[in-house]
Structures are given as structure tokens and as C-alpha cells.
Image (cartoon, rainbow, N blue to C red; front, side, top):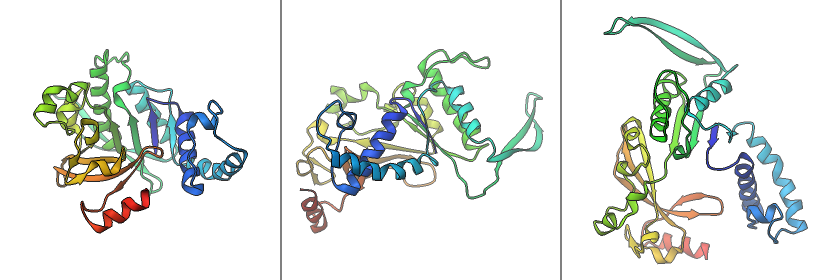
Length: 278
């Protein structure tokens, strides 16, 4: 995986992963600031136990490459291509003539290991930077998002046969009073933010929703007050090869940033689940 941390540093990213693994293994929660010594709370025992987790995180770094210093679309693309060096080769296909008389040769990247698959994540693309581009204007955020989406379709997905994930933040006008009054609070393609047109390019669009933020005490037949700030829903907004319009209730663990699908509303399984969390 190539992960572009446009919002945070690579150091912060890996520290949160380390502390999440520490909590899972030893049942203790530490914040980034406690671990760094900015806040009190970490003991000598915590430090010693964290040393046991470090090798596991170091092993993860062999498979997840995090970049925090690249933010323009072409820079992201070139970084992906650099990571692919030595993993395969570009093979030229047949050449065709388009309607304007241009010769176009199809190129495909063939991996040395057929079981290898690349995943590229840009988080979040509202922080992409404009760039000087000799082929197209990329002078503002809207154009930068469009250029990145173009690269994803034409090269990252088609040529390199990779999975690409673009993380958006909802447009602020999607949270205004009009949408609240009309009951249009859930994520949608019209709320993709700085360039909603790129939603047309996506094979799958998934949104996260926090009904508690809007004071909704009941949602999808769940009593949201039973969950504190741990209730979220996942919405399949678009799926070209599957079913769209689905919504699932999730238990959200903010410390580890993890989601667990909840049992059905008002079921004994849900009661047992909640009892295990309290």
C-alpha cells in the first residue's frame, strides 16, 4: 500500500498505529501526547510493553509506505510509479488511430508476482496542492482534484491495475440548516466538497455519517443514546457493480479509528454487545 498522508505526518500516522496495537494487546489507552511526554500518563511499564509491539509495527512498514511530503497530483503519480520500479514492467499493446488521426499505443504494467496488488490511498484530497502542469491548468484545488482523478482512472487503475482510494471531507454546505430541515443530512455525491464532479469517476462511493452530531436520538431503528459517541453509519452511495443505497450501523472506536458492524437493532445480540462495551 502507498498511503499519502496529506493531513498528518508519517510520524503521527505510525505512532497512532503503534498505540492502537498496544491497546489491543495490553488493554491500555494512551494518547499521542502522553506517548510523546507532552502530557502525563505513560508509565515505565507502558514503555516496556510498547517495546514489545514495535517490531510488529516495523514489519507493517514493509507493506505500507507512508508519504507526507508529496501533495500535488503529478507528484503523487510519480511517487506511485517510483514504488513500482522493480516490481514489473510496462508492456506495449496494439497501436490504434483515434478520430483525430493520433496514434495511441495501449500500455499495461505486468507484475513479476501475479499475486501482488497495489493499493493507493490519498487522505484527504481536499488538501491536494495546485501545480505547474504543461498539459492542463492545475492552478487551484478544484483542478488539482480533477487531475488526480484523471491519473487514477487512466494510469493507476487501468495501466497499473491498482485499487485507488480517495478520501473526501463533506462540503460544509452539506451541513447547513436547509439540509437539516429537509432531512438531507446523510452523505451523498452532491456533498463531495471541492470537486463533486469527480464522483462520476468512482466505481464505488462510501460515506460515513454521525447522526448523534445532529441530535438524532433514533436512527436506522437504533437508540443512538445507548452508544455515546460510538455510533456511526456506513452508506454505500454508489456501486457500479453492486447494490447502492445500503446503510449499516457501526460501532466506532475513535481511539483506534476502527469500525465494527453492529448486530440488528433491538436484538439480544445487540444487548450482549453493548454490555461487553460498558
